[in-house]
Length: 164
Length: 164
Image (tube, rainbow over all chains, first blue to last red; front, side, top):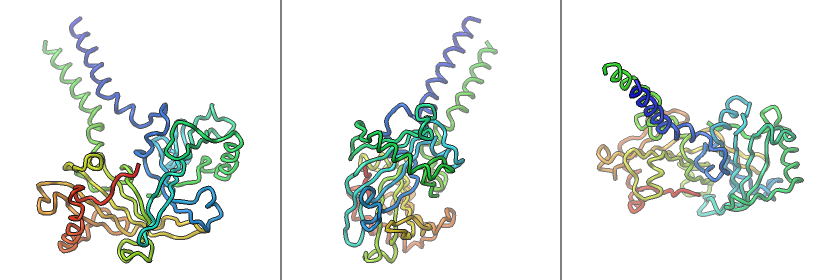
């Protein structure tokens, strides 16, 4: 009997080991969005110099979502742990083609309904260039992010939709 | 003893069941590239009407790679099972911003060094619009794909590089 118990314990540990990676991968929320380039690409757009928002948002942007945020795109309800990254790149022209240039910044929205209760459950942050460790937004800038995103309250404060 | 064997068999089946999804997910090569939108986004570009390639490639394109193809982007050697999808979208303008429109087609490269031995190990295929089941390329068109891609022989016949 003791031998059977030892076997069961061993096998349970084996299952945990084999499946730990499976459980851990969908949302590694503890980490900063360093790995967002492997997340799902939601959609893209090119903001031309003639756009009224070109001063801040001019360039080619891509939006990425982790698995929890993808649930939100499907249901309209973004669960805690959702992370959405707006990745803005400069562009350059080559023979009639607009190519991706250096990164201007990334904007990151992180859903935590307790921590960010005053801003619809979303935390807003920005990292300049390829930096992923030193956030740059002032409290006023974060308030401005939220103010604009309130227009999208009915879609969980998120502007983008998933392009199939 | 028989009871122990039964327990071991049961637990092995349990492990197989729990981990089957984990093994299947990285590269489900048997399936068509229906799920490519969840794969890693490699890079993008906008081909303007004034480009010499606009007739065929005009629009905003995104390139997606499965895990095996990502190994190839890192090493320059694309293993069998690599799948790369070139996703071409029409565009529309709105207030100085170029937005994604309907899909024109997807081009798919699939690496199988035995099956496609005559074309560098790569199979070339295309699906029109949102169709993922009815390939449209003639043998001549596939030969033309390969002919152009031979310029990239030193990079495994792949034009794109992963944009970090």
